[in-house]
Amino acid sequence: MGSTDPEIAPGGDHIVAIGAEIRGVLTGFGLVAAGVLVLAQVDLGLPGQSLLQSLQLHMGVALLGLALLLALARARWRAGLVVAMAVFAGGHVMWRVADQYEGRGALAGLERAAQFTLLSFNVLNSNDRHEELADYIAGSGADFAFIMEAGRLRQHFEQLEAVYPYRVGCEQGGPCDLLMLSKLPLENAEIRSLGNTHPNRMIVAQTEIGGEALTLVAAHLTKPYFDDAGLFEARRLTRQLAAIEGPLVLAWDFNSAPWADAIDDLVHGAALLPPPRYNATWPTELGPLGIPIDHMFSRAPIIIEDIEALSDPLGSNHLGLIAKLAIVAE
Image (cartoon, helix red, strand yellow):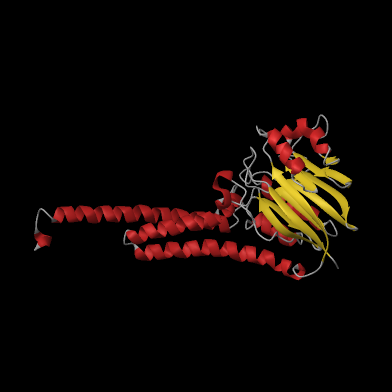
């Protein structure tokens, strides 16, 4: 009887129409998300694909929220498809990271011959807290400090040199993006360019710890949305690291997450070992919920035993990383 009532039926039709419209809008979002995931997975040579790959885990979480809305809107089969997309996005990230970690197992239980500490930090060219920043670096206890966008630290070099007497980068009158500071002597130090977009953003130097010679590499790659510049730089970096023999440590601002193609190719192509965990470093406002785009890697017999992101960005738009590393006794 209610279905034939002229006062009720139109209202019911209106509610049904609104529900259908909501489901249509949510389905549209789902189709867009599916397209974005395809772009993240299939290399089409488009600018910014590395950025989409870096956001893959966050996209998976967002898809779960979309699936919940679709379920509430009574579009259950579409909600199920979106859940499947979310599982794929998250599962692909976990599979790729797990694959990178396989190499750490061989060094896990071996005796340590020597230990050292490394600080890596993109401190931002326009940093207004440069005095606090210089105080932190000088008092960090790190044996080495790799600093990116270091221009505001020029005025604090005297303070830093009292702790770190060996320095590569930021020469008098030259550019000051990448800076390598060391408490130990550095030999065969060389500043290289990985591309023409931002030259002189790679430093390679040798040092010795506990009788073990090793190579230190600092690099700062171009953001992934500057055409394919960052990707080409990552490939050049992979080739150069593969040509370096023996143990090494690499720390840099890659502007990409570790599950992005460029970094995954680097890890395998240069025989690198990841840290015990990847720490979110950007954007700083999200803290541990952000994206890990600043990284440290090592090559056997060096292993990163512990790594932390700084709790205070000290005026930067990145969080710095400080790590304890060990040389495994052979």
